[in-house]
Length: 309
Image (tube, rainbow, N blue to C red):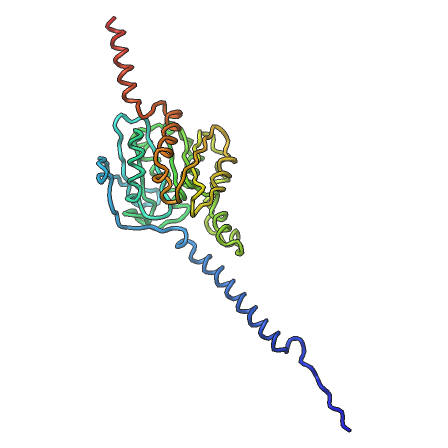
């Protein structure tokens, strides 16, 4: 009788192993592909500019001045200066990563009711501004707007309120660290871009891949001016904990304002809670409330009476 040898397939030759290795190769390829997409297209994921100007402050009955700002690297930026009657201060407003200044008219209307002059500008690549956005570019654009207020309109640096929303909060913090203002307002702002990305993609090495930082958390501890931190628990883009971490990291004097609503409309859906919170903070740090013109008139009248006596 002849014996037949049965030779089994080696571990690497078994069909199940071949399938497993093929699946692993595909998974690794997909993972690497996602990392490459995030690395290459980060700018498109972060910045969402729109060119079309949909409305102006005139739509809500406000007069304004169209301003062209000239950056140190030769770009022209579009901006609006909106004066307030009996103004008690000036706000430099840094908007978020999407749209353009025409989508911030409601914010200008609120600040105007609070008797604040407002300069809002479009970053490079947004609205009618030339160029394309970058982290260094947004910082440079904010400083260009700051120089316009200080050098062209005579606003003392220490009298200026810098207000940033969302990504604009990171831009505002960078500017406030470099040029200390009267006060800084950070609204719906993140701690840093890598922190946001890590929350969205916890399974990716986002800190290694991130080409943008916008590290608000690192800067805020070095900013000495009064600070107002605003955030909503219902923010659907920047988690509430980002606002709380910024507030905890900030040195005094500091104020916390919790609003309601989503990331893009919390300042509107919160209504008077938002507006009154802003007014209280501005009153403490500009010396005048919403009724300041009336009180100013009464003080002037009393002064005239005293002189007459």
